[in-house]
Length: 425
Image (cartoon, rainbow, N blue to C red; front, side, top):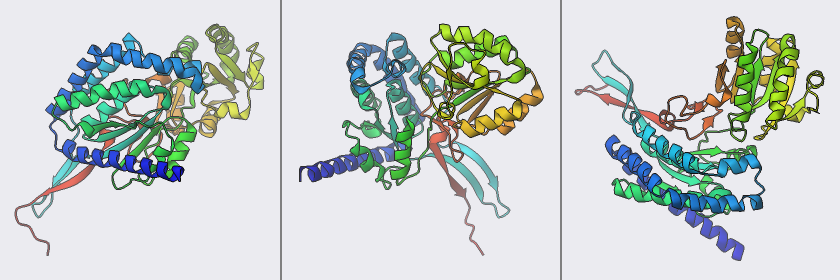
């Protein structure tokens, strides 16, 4: 009986939150860009003013991280400090400076009968956003959703609950101050995983669900969601060093892609090297990687050039490590590299390093990923780096939104037709 009561309570809670979000979405749909930008600037200001409160809450989460079994890389994603708080505030201000997508006329034309046909951007409505570990995502997601006219229900991981509650408090306060509906940004306060299932059934009130986390989370959401899902699948990202690569450039790109922040989705997880440059490149980059604490899991041929490495399994080539671990394979040619990426990758971000324009074009055409880079780090696949201000995720889908999902990716459109009395014969 107690179990039945709990299920009923969670269902009622989810419905209450979603209903409030739907009401807020209606108000946001007609809110002016000035009101939304005022809120973003107020939120940035309050974040700086209340940084101590946020950092105190975050310290509680970081202290409890070992109880949740978080790795060192995952704890790094969880931890906030002064510079990261400032980066979060700056991102809010950058989003305020971006054009408001709501009401943008995508295209228009006049029919022979005089009807003016316009395709106009509109918000999606209510976004249910599920994510893990990174409290900076809380402010990014809230900002992008509200700026694009959407209400958002935030469901962060239990490991970041105190940080997210502190951030939500200041976001809600500033929504009121900016004369926007406070329920435009809500946070799921229960850590009970069963609550997610109740939200996923509310398709009449929630327009889209965006899961951002591990593969098991996304598979669960895909299995249970009754509304559309924009997937942020794992980032098994590759760097391919071509036979025509500048090897010094390739080394710099790989070190940045793997080591700058190994716990994020756009970090490199696998290195492919053309046979013709394998010895020169691997004997140079290997010591650099080891010095930085990277564990190498290698194919049989690359192990001979990388002393102390471990043999790679088939699973290693398929794994998003989110840690200082890198799989390595020597390939015979460009086509084998493309085939490997397509077989083992996650269609997130993949890189070719080459001075051969023909090879670069063939790689770009052959690799079906959300972002394909030529001579640049995987770490650039990011909303901020792409000039979107920030992102709510990096979609590996091919419909509606792909790659970093910024403001426009959280809109749909409607047709607006102007006439002067036309009737159809």
